Image (cartoon, helix red, strand yellow):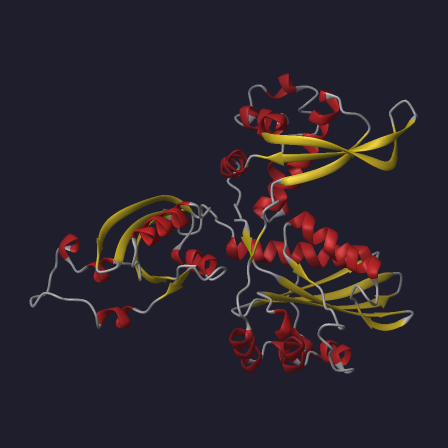
Length: 401
């Protein structure tokens, strides 16, 4: 990855742009219900074939759930499955054995007839079967933590892709209407990496004729105006141009709170788009996925606006189901508020970022809480006897559905 400094980037990083982006975005995170389900064509329905495919798909799934291809660096050696005895003394032997025995992680599988043909090892052409595997969420998360890899929740930010292409055939913005094959590359790679995607639709949301030039020139306000109807959580902007026998691309990912850029030179337009999705997934994972090394510890958070018994049950379930939380304990409750002690796999900043994705918990200022809190007349130095609000490291308001 290479940071770039260009007039395009400088315009996009103006304070006006970031402020406009932040104010215009309405968080619409998507819950990926099929995150742990993958499929592949197979030549037969044998247990042996399913075991082989399961091992291949597990690697893809680990990248999808962690959000980073770096997890593949921790995979066993290529010859491990054939000659495991050579590695019996390795401290990773047990873990590597699990990684090459993926079937124990599968909750369910199914086959569907396909019209496609596959060639078997004997050279025979047969009608393929579509094998669908659903892996167990708990087992996969546990495996990733043993690998000391990130875990990215099923609630993920939606990304709007603006791709401006200057090629030998002229200039165009990549949309399903203008170029369906390239749009399908964006779609398939986004689904592979577990990135909720949005592609421009000019039939529903017409744009100015100058939008290509605006993107190419990095005119932020025009890009934001065109993006507003999609209510995206992040915007990926790609500028692609032919450069000799290669394609050169500048990617910029904007989240409303930060921005990061990436340049690359690749052989094909397919590579350009896959590179952009991969870059986007890696960056979003670094922001939203739980990392054990990022200020992991125990914190106290206070949650207000718990008006009914159902709210208490809902917030407790909500916190326990976050991949970032390791343990949740109620410390104290009073006046529609609860003080929770949460043990996190990351820091409070990371927790706050993840909570913005669905707006069930909204940050609340400590000063606002002071107005409705009864304090003792004398200062209290004992932490346990301090008012509940003063014990908290962070403050949130529960927004029931």
